[in-house]
Length: 405
Image 1 (tube, rainbow, N blue to C red):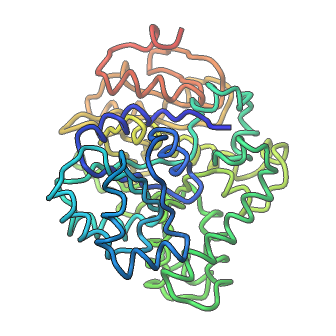
Image 2 (cartoon, rainbow, N blue to C red):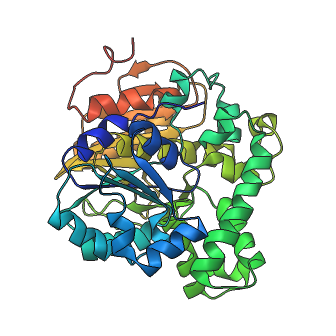
């Protein structure tokens, strides 16, 4: 079963303008399915295949020229043959055909380095993360049970093929460590790295203390930073940086740690069922992880460049997410796992409003409930309405009522 993706219109639009379109994202996020379904007449090449990889490495020019007679070509996992990027540049400069090359890759930093060096001005970049809640709602694959959503996560295969989530996610972790980490870090003992990922899962939603994380894993702080970089560039974790505006206050400078997928967090924490999450001590942090990930997914799917930050000063005043739309254009969002809409939850946002002169009409709490509720201090939004929040604030609309009916 193919699950339609919200990013498709932007993929088709950009491919009509650029000769190369790159779809980046983690393994198993649906990049290949998206490319094939969007360009069904294109030839498909997967460089995970050793024979095709060898052919591309030994004679890149002939490899690319062999597809010139067709409507276009999808080159999957192109990071395996970095030599192709320079030849792609020459090929598209000689014959600029919009949308002819669709390339995909799972290793963000390798691709970005090569694109920056060779393909600037010739390639459109898109990032595809696992499914959003809104995509799942459209396919009736989510019954809007919060605990089920947190436990299963959002990888397409779990929903498309009705696979047991815990089995699939544990295999995903093992495969990721074996295929990507061993290759990128060139380490023979991956057990330490697996323990490192588990320690990261236990710190979801917290400020990163590199020294403490390194000590608990018995590695150096520099190694911890390098390993976090690998996790981030392969789309396992998301480091949320602090908002830079001080408002004459001393600010926290350390980033906060999140995962792109809550199912991975639950698997790493050995949570066995959705029911365990009702009273689990990390339920709030895992819920926060879900919302941060959902907002980032929606931004990517809209091809929107708004930046996400958090804000915290040394006195403990905090806002979970600051969506930075542009110069001095921000939207504060608090995340609360509670299913009950209580005015006391606006404490952090009210402090933000005081120091930043920000309007309460543009302050939001995304919570674990199911209703949209407007209060004097701001608005409560259900966790499954993030797409409507972003559709409103990114279009500079002033109200949500018309969006949420």
